[in-house]
Length: 342
Image 1 (tube, helix red, strand yellow):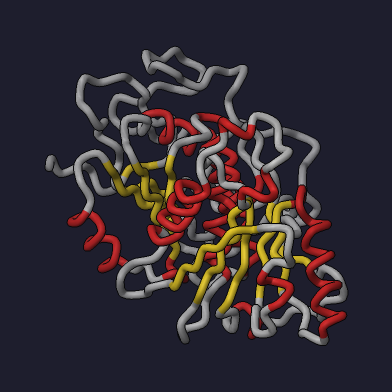
Image 2 (cartoon, one colour):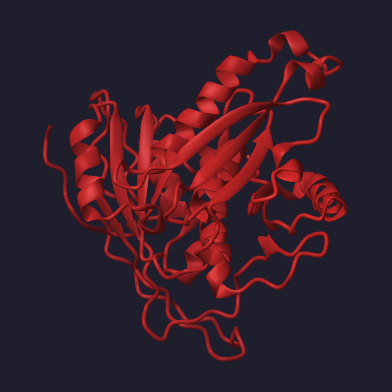
């Protein structure tokens, strides 16, 4: 394979279409750290920012592009949230995703997050998958996190294993020393249904995590849920993710039932994606089972430690906590992720 540039400065990534099956994507995207905001946020005057250094062939923002689906000034994703705190614009992620459409799987190696807590990790994943949803909700984008075992050696080994139809890009998300923002930060990790206050030790002690969904025709929202489940499962002793996949019993009265993929296909795709979030050196046990009209495993397994839900299914998480309380089980650590907007 042709050796690609190792480092480029974040800026408008070129989106010119090429005749190659897989475009020449950058191997590393380094953040152009934003200037820290003053203590009280915004100032009364807006100062003109110095222009960023663009990669060779890149066009300034707002100029036209020959990409099959480029981001115009009308649909460009604004800079914000967890990525903004690290000097990375969502525009840059969208442009990267736009030129990676030919890839079967895009692996995003997210560095600089090793010491971040679960809430910060989830905020970054939400931003990434919101960008995915705006470009192509069905695109398979796999986050590679340092906390999941993706060090430099593991990433290099992955690059040697994958074929030409896949690609690995490293996105540096280190916070600039002394750079802080008043803006940003979400409340993904919540104590639901009477769960005790969480401590730093809890981040390192989760060995069994449950997540559920229909997972029909995998999209960005599904992958956000599954990637989060992998990320919060951190114990070194046989960490396990339990994936509940909606079974036929619960789909009987669902509209367009005949168009939904079979349980076997949906379960296989969900498990395959989660497996890709871990290197062979840091394996994760994955157990799939059908969700039927009985109580889910999260409510019946005493030593289950965490549950990942979306804000849309938060009430289900509260019901599980109540069921565990009635059974005399300890409450779960509930991780709530936002809904991506496609």
